[in-house]
Image 1 (cartoon, rainbow, N blue to C red):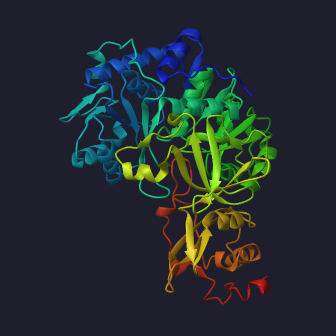
Image 2 (cartoon, helix red, strand yellow):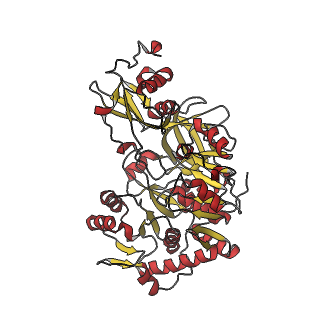
Length: 529
């Protein structure tokens, strides 16, 4: 295991790399290289412009900017001033943006003009309209400014505002996969520790090149940026993730490390073989939620190692690291975290028993400090200094943890609790299936009926009966979906995780096993083949 350097705040990291690695390339984007010294200079210029716009330490700043080095520089400039950045998803519409604006209540809102209509509509109806600062020149309305104006009338801010590792660093809104988005307040320590442990997981070295595709409204993107500043390594940034262009981009950059999230492993595997994937330069693919059945396939096809971990917005980017290559495991707790499993009554359970994963950060600021402005929601998750993850997990005799699904991603059918994750695992392993999502609909008998929404691989037949038989052979009768609906793709969040709340269930056109007379019951399941 690597020996880590003392933790530094983001501003300290920027200054350190500008001093000891001034001429090394920090980031390449669209063919342009930015050195660590150039990066620090731009951060100071932008910080001066923010002071000119009236920003003070402790203020919040909304960011709605596409993938670019400007985005990284502006985020860091906000921190340099001592303010708190609040990255918003560039895919939000005005209603969703208004909701988050009313929660965060930023003083400034910095945005690309391509989002002008959405931003202006949301700001107009928000409770405390922020001042808008456009990155590009163009028409300016009352209450707005342009970055170039501010840069021309300001001076670089050479000295960063002092901050401690335990000060609030950023407000990251959850993706809302299990409910309304909430603003998670995370400290400088949270990001510094997250980047340190990400570096342990992916064996980060100074001569590495990281393929940087993560959207900057996702916390993992800033962990990668922080890691690059900790190690002095290079980021090769692209505008967006593209499975079809991935290996060409990696070949062009000479990238050595590839980060994955959510469903990206299967999305990449589903692509046709291309010449650039052979003898590629990537040595480690690292991240979370690699499907068990795809783990070895991914390693073999692309001649690399998969390094899996577990984390959450509330807990840490990585609370667990799998450094031993145990397929399907998320590994063991990081040194800054204790973890254990509890039953529904809160009692600890032993190896082999599935329950809720509980985390105890050391110190407390390693994890989320609070949900911004939502003390009741915070109290549901943070209790007695512990983070109740809301995820089911199991630990084996060797101390390896295994993710077993989300508590809120469970259904109730005929009086029985059903883990959607367990059902999806079986369906995803069926022939021809690329990905699935299991959701519930109200039943005329009470509780819920289970709907399997399935995306098949190109050319694979849409055979509901075969999927039902796969489920009936491996699941309890009450876990077997009644309805089967096929889709071309799913609505997805920034990490490519499926957004179940946005799935449009179409029972009128779904295959109904009960109407077909083949739905397993307690009595007939043993004969259902």
